[in-house]
Amino acid sequence: TQLLEQSPQFLSIQEGENLTVYCNSSSVFSSLQWYRQEPGEGPVLLVTVVTGGEVKKLKRLTFQFGDARKDSSLHITAAQPGDTGLYLCAGAGDYKLSFGAGTTVTVRA
Amino acid sequence: GAGVSQSPSNKVTEKGKDVELRCDPISGHTALYWYRQSLGQGLEFLIYFQGNSAPDKSGLPSDRFSAERTGGSVSTLTIQRTQQEDSAVYLCASSLALSVSYNEQFFGPGTRLTVL
Image 1: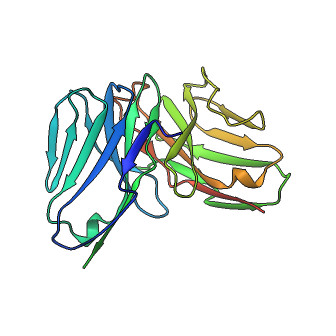
Image 2: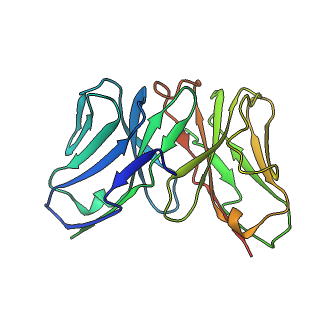
C-alpha cells in the first residue's frame, strides 16, 4: 500500500499544452519532494516544499504544498518534449522518504 | 565531480543463487540509502546507513536480504537464495547528512536484477 497516491498514472499531451500531476496522502509530512526520473537513471530532485501552503516556481514548473501538508501538485506550463519522464513525489519522515508510484508524462512534439 | 555509482548495472541470475550489489556513494556523504523499484511502482525504502551503522532494518523485505557499509563509504546489498519476486531495479542514494528534508539525496543509476 502506497502512503502517497499519485494521479494520473499516465499522461500524454501535445507540446505546448499544460499539465498537472497530483500527490495525495492521509499522512502529514515534514516536507514533500518532487523528482523526475528518466529511463536507466536514478531520480533527480526537482524541489522540496516544507511549509503548508507553499508555492515554488522553477521556470515552467509550479509546485504547491497543501495547507495541511498532506498533498501537493506539480503544474507544467507549455510542456516541451524534454519534460518527458517519470515524475515522483516523496514524503519526508525522520530519516526516510516514502514515494508515490509515479506519473509517466509523455510530451509529443 | 563523481556521482553515486552502482555495480553491476545489470544482473541476471537463477532462482536460488546469491547476489551482491554494490554502491559507491559521493565522497564525504555520511548517509546512504537503498531502495527497490519494481515495474510500475514507486521506490520502496529498504534500509539506511548513518556512517557504518544501520539503525533500522525493518524495511528489508525478508531475512534473505542484508546490507553492510564499511569505512563510511562503499555499501553492499546481499540477497541470498534469490526468488523471482526479487526482480527489480535496486537504487542507492547518498546525502551529506541524515535529515531528509534538508539534505538532498543523490541517486545512482541502479542495478537491474532479473531472477530467472
